[in-house]
Image (cartoon, rainbow over all chains, first blue to last red; front, side, top):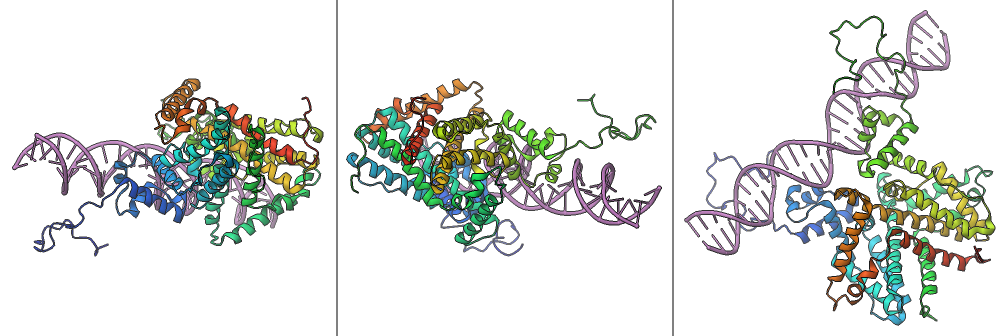
Amino acid sequence: MRSANSDDDLPEVPLPPWRKARKPSQPRPQLSRDLIVETGLRVLDAEGLDALSMRRVAQELGTGPASLYAHVSAKEELLELIYDRVLGEVRLPEYDPSRWQTLLRQCALELHRVIVGHADVARAALASIPTGPNAIRLSEFMFGLLIDAGMPPRDASLAFDRIVLYVCADAFEGSLHYPRMKALGHTKLTEYFHMYVAQIEEYFTSLPPDRFPHLSANARALVADGGEARFRYGLDLLFDGLVARMPAGGDKPGA
Amino acid sequence: MRSANSDDDLPEVPLPPWRKARKPSQPRPQLSRDLIVETGLRVLDAEGLDALSMRRVAQELGTGPASLYAHVSAKEELLELIYDRVLGEVRLPEYDPSRWQTLLRQCALELHRVIVGHADVARAALASIPTGPNAIRLSEFMFGLLIDAGMPPRDASLAFDRIVLYVCADAFEGSLHYPRMKALGHTKLTEYFHMYVAQIEEYFTSLPPDRFPHLSANARALVADGGEARFRYGLDLLFDGLVARMPAGGDKPGA
DNA sequence: CGTGATCTACGAACGCCGTTCGTCAACGAA
DNA sequence: TTCGTTGACGAACGGCGTTCGTAGATCACG
């Protein structure tokens, strides 16, 4: 409680003449919106969304929480900015409406990959109504594919919206395990999942077969497929419906 | 701020000999799990999930927050209990696997209706991995329909899971407007939505047409359909895919 | 009829949180 | 040089989930 950085106050010592009035090179820490967003994302990646507080970000920047509010109106805005920053990592394929199905699918998978790659950012994704530049860029691409493939605008709007919702929802559901894992002290992901799956299966097995015949008899099948398979299955369902609704059908005769 | 129930404390008055030592009839407020859940749900319905704190529930029960922890291990458990309590309102139709499509659809719509009917309980729905009795009851019904209609267990497991996820996700997305509306001081739902839609449409319209041709040109279509239509559209997509995967096809030749 | 164990209620406190206010230093324009 | 503006930030406010210690009621058992 004594040593470091106690050169403030204490005016009784004459203050040696070299060492010009505190912090000669960088009097301002050059705080900025981008720096705050980047720092927030770093905290989120490293410790999860629960650890992402204004205070935590400020601390990481070596300042107090009040300093952030000059650049960000509220925590909600910071979360939206972080989410849009994450969306910036989505790589779009080359635009080609004749291959709309392939490309749209690719977009969905890529979006899912990026979101899942950033801890539980999915919670922020689902909670915010994204209007940032990267969100718009992605929307224009996906929505445009459907329009240029011949879908009526209202249908394209609905379809696009449902796909994004599904992708985010699945990522969100998966991200729920993230804080749970931390809470249980597990550090190995596979180990945690093994335990979790075994637990659920045992629960289903233990159900009274007379009242829950299907659940108890199929406990194994109920936990058989993990996150990625579940995600793809639902995406396939959606795309099946989509192709059926598209005037010209889907692409992908062979690949 | 004076009259009722101020007979505690104040020991300077000798305490008349009738009126035996404070609270003769109900010395215990009969706090219980169910009462806490019911109270929590009441707070949630009336003021939203953000207002649902341990302190708020305790206050509603005329006690302190510590008292709740004898019946509920944490806030998360309380939320799960409340969610399962809400699931208890889901009314299941008569079981008939030959009409699986109709009944499963009916289940999804009913589940959606019930969740949407309880403010933003959807947030708790999506965040919890439901294992309560009412969740199991609903799962057995929906999963059983798919099994008895001839679906392989693993597919049935995935399909059931995806449907529930979609229903909850849509309800959740819709519930995001709930706190926003409150924050903006709106009390009329239609009025708020009118404003919101107009705002979004204007935003899309204002986008530079050279960089976002599809979004800016179709602003009207992008906001044309409200929550219920969006929900049904996505559900239709899912069921189309489901029917295509079902060995015997779907029911509903006419109705 | 004790009497100790067990359980419920709960006041107080801890350590977080998001946000606001007032102050103060630095800076750009006049 | 002066002054208004702006960013940084210490301090504080009110609220949160949760824990601890205590006190009283309840009950099984001697």
